Image: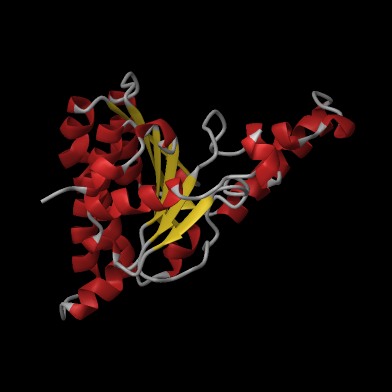
Length: 248
């Protein structure tokens, strides 16, 4: 069976793909199981997507794993997600190193329980020299948290006299975001049929192409990723210019 991978134009590959991994709970409900069952199977989709991006040559993959709002879920679900995070980090560490993938994480990470935070820091340190692709987990993250922190940090620099208010520009803001040093996402994928951004990378996705699929995250396969990339490659990215200007 022919794979959609063969239809991808490698010269137009997105450099950075961001994903809102949605639908784990609803997928589990369809199976007549608890929500955590969906989260457990969502790890398989993470592995498949990560492998597919690395194989293609995508340089950055950023996954919305746990939002600041997710702390408001039931303690049972939060505890299960934290336990799953620890086991996934331990189980996937060898795969990350074997595939030369660097692990990164952004968010209010100090809110994580001690054991999860330590497991995360260990995995990040253990993969820091890998160069094939950067996999970023957004944990205890929201864009409003990120932007608020950036404003606070810039205000502190103004207060200390290290920057003048009139010198603050878009580059200044970008430099103070959690994603500093990373290119903005070219493509944002959201699963489960929902068509909203949910407080995710609001500054960074200003010119990203958005792709929505009805598939729940545990059902998302490599072929689904290829389909999203092919759709991305049919679009004309103008960045505020006209088609005529782009084609010159």
